[in-house]
Length: 118
Image (cartoon, rainbow, N blue to C red; front, side):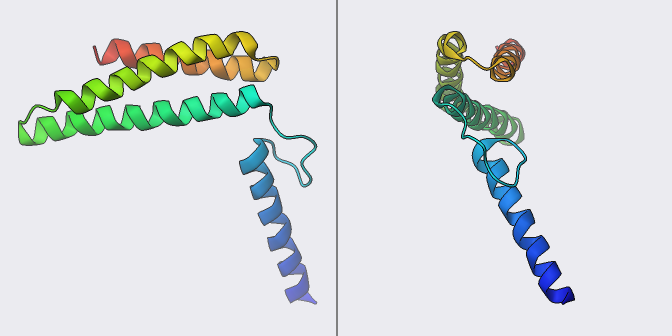
């Protein structure tokens, strides 16, 4: 009996985790999936994080080896600028207030990162 209860709890935890990953909300049964604009916002955030990591890693590599890596950093900065432009246009199309707040936070984070790495 205990094994069955543990198995059910693990299944419920897995279902909640999957629903959170796919919808962004903690729930046992997803009520609705996120809108296209919110999905695009998540994708833009992923692209920004990847470019941000590339710049940070390029800076570390340049400081350790003493070699210059301008093409890597330049390409990543262009990607961040593209994300910023797309985010500004996306912000106008977002209906949800929470998504607008997320977009605004990401936009301010992008601007702060660009100021720090210019």
